Amino acid sequence: MFSTLPGVSAPPPFGGNQRTVVIHVDPERLRAYRISPEELMRAVQTGNAILPSGNVRTGDLNRIAPINSVVANFNTLADLPVRSGAGPAVYVRDLGYVDNSTDIPTGYALVDGKRTVYIPVAWQSPVREWIDRYGEIRDLLDRLSREFLQRLQNRDRKL
Image 1 (tube, rainbow, N blue to C red):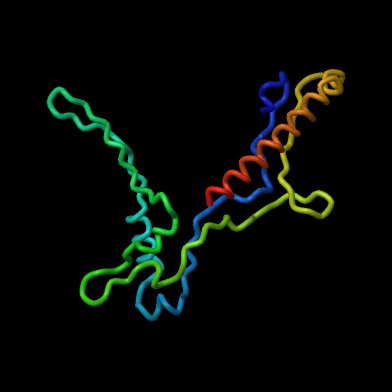
Image 2 (image 1 turned 60 degrees about the horizontal axis):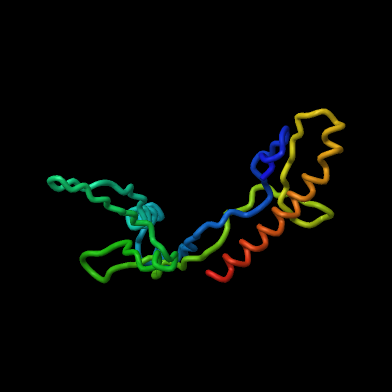
C-alpha cells in the first residue's frame, strides 16, 4: 500500500503472530509406544510433503497434473500413521493432538503497554513533502486497518 506514495517505503511489519499448525506431543506417550521424536517428525514430513505439480505427456497430449499432497484440513494430520507393521498401527493422534496455533513469539511491539503490530515507514523526500503528504499516509493506515480487520473476520468465519 505504501508503494503507491512516491518516496515512501515500509519494510515488513513485525509484532504479529504467524499462523502455525502445531502438533503437541505427550512425552509419556512417546515413551510408552517407544517412538522417538525424530520418527514422529519423519512421519509428518512424509505424510505432508510439498510436491510440485507437473505435466504428463502422452503422445501428442500434454496434461497438467496438479499434485500437492499438503493436507487441506490440519486436523487430518492426526490421522497420519507414525508406525505400522507388526502390532497395532500408531497414529499422530495416539501421541498428542494437532492445534491451529501460532509460532512462539520471539519479539513483539508494545504501544501504551499493549501488544501491537509495528510498521516502520521510511520517507525519502524533503520534510516539506512529508508534512504535505501526512494526510495521505494517515488515510492509507486507516484503510490498511479496515482491510486487516475485514480479512481477520473472514478468516475466523472460515475456521
